[in-house]
View 1 (cartoon, helix red, strand yellow):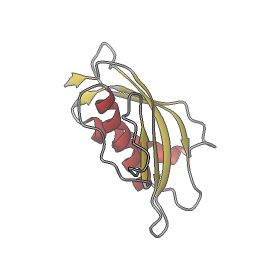
View 2: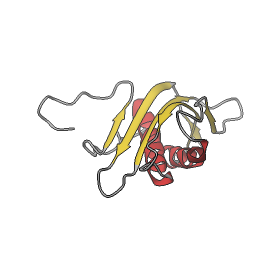
View 3: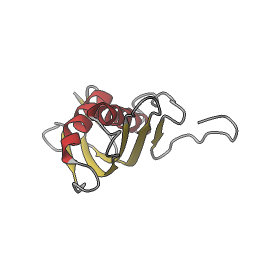
Length: 135
């Protein structure tokens, strides 16, 4: 397993699909290279009132999917939820996009696919969209 070579702070993902009832999810994650043992870790500093902790396993699983075979320390630093529209599916998707964005920022992969206004992803070094080009 290879490790994330650089720190990638402030990866933010907002999932806001307007079909039916959501899903809605919002997360901010800092990614760091793995520790001396080379393994991945998932930590959080988010209070229950910002993001109910019942969604943490879905975020963790999504980040693992997004990182694939790359080890990293992922620290969830902020989040948000909607009392009706938030569910595990949205947080897993947000985690996956965050992991993929961290790889792109570190030069290890392609940026996550653009999903327009339904899924917004931002990370350090993200290419800016030209005015009038969508997103």
